[in-house]
Length: 53
Image (cartoon, rainbow, N blue to C red; front, top):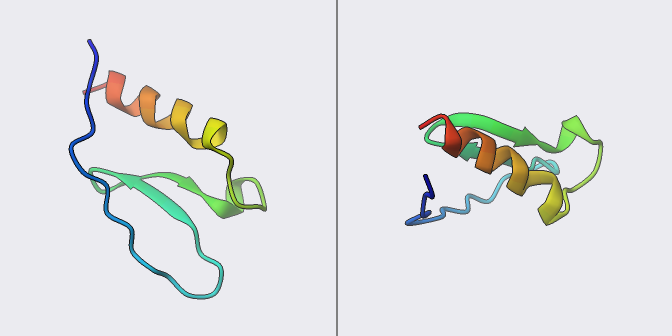
């Protein structure tokens, strides 16, 4: 089943925080890699979560 993302909300943080949440669930945090992610770092994680829905 293919899912479409209806909206993305960007919330400015402080102290270098970069987290990605999907429906309130933490999907990615910068501390996982120790750097800001590339699109290929986050998109597979989002797809994996969406497949569970």
